[in-house]
Length: 484
Image 1 (spheres, rainbow, N blue to C red):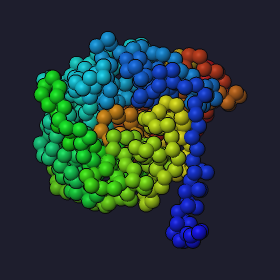
Image 2 (tube, rainbow, N blue to C red; image 1 turned 135 degrees about the vertical axis):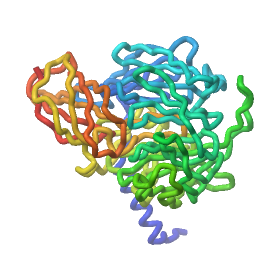
Image 3 (cartoon, helix red, strand yellow; image 1 turned 90 degrees about the vertical axis):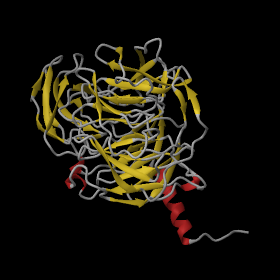
Image 4 (cartoon, rainbow, N blue to C red; image 1 turned 90 degrees about the horizontal axis):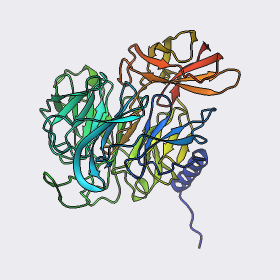
């Protein structure tokens, strides 16, 4: 017997059909030779990917038309013989290098290793990085690059924090007074005022804010919806003792309106994963060290009994948040509704300069919708003529975008809040990325003037061209230049 559908059910089905037709997944023509466990966007427009073997790394280069789908893979330098990490803290630095620190596993063994390394694309080398003084174990830790360009990391096993100066590779111990629980399994979201937001896992459903200038944590109140999932196993022995996991959580993404969309795992006894929305209000006007400010509201639950514990999310150029559920289904949050779209092969998510999303190094997610002009980087100063092989300064605003745009539940940070320079030859339409480096700021959603250096590729085509600055997949209005 045929049952009649309710009006609400019909509306939902129509919405799902529209989304499934609008969003598409495209398989890369050339698949990563050893898979791609985690991907980083380098400042020359290429993608650095860790192979499934762990120590081997690969680079995806877009084709001459700027297509990543038709791009090619090449192998780059491997890590040192003693370092084969999984689940580490990481970042693309303002000077263009990539940093990885620690790892929950090393060569497949649970070790909470304190090893680390920095990749230099110019030299194609990995250089070992010493840990902060006294940090015998690091593991999978929360981390972020601060507006100053310094790398901030939290030690997994306690409340300790340290800051790395990339120029000197010297660590400085940072205060962490006010922290309500240890750093394990928590993720950090950089806010427009330079503070760091986290949603607690052990002390759930509490949220906190860290102000680096005063080295102090303050409470942001309850997330209302509990985002913490229970531990998947009991205490685990390692060289320094036993680690007792507090559970898992999903990624949290800063949106263009200043809110944060935070996702969760299955809380104990819950039938599905929850989400929460933080609206900071006048957070930047609140004195450092002040109490709770802003408002948390419970967000929409995951459909289909899904969740995003220990999974990825990215900010689309439309301002929607794309979340990867643990079912390998995608969901888009537009500020109000949380709608399922497509199933994928799963894997890490990365915002590409094209505005597409690289999925697991093997597919590209194509979304609908686009940015508004107010979100675009603005070029205020650029040379009208450049010479191949030379370096130049470019200035403007919103070069770092409105968000870090990429997040995981805790470790595996792959933020893309830095400027890329894309040059298109007018006669051929061919696209070249000029490596950027030494950005003056890594702040998000800042309207303050910023600058970066860009190196004109030696092998690019000469003649009349256009130049764009791209941040988180959103391009500036093009400037006309001549390449000599």
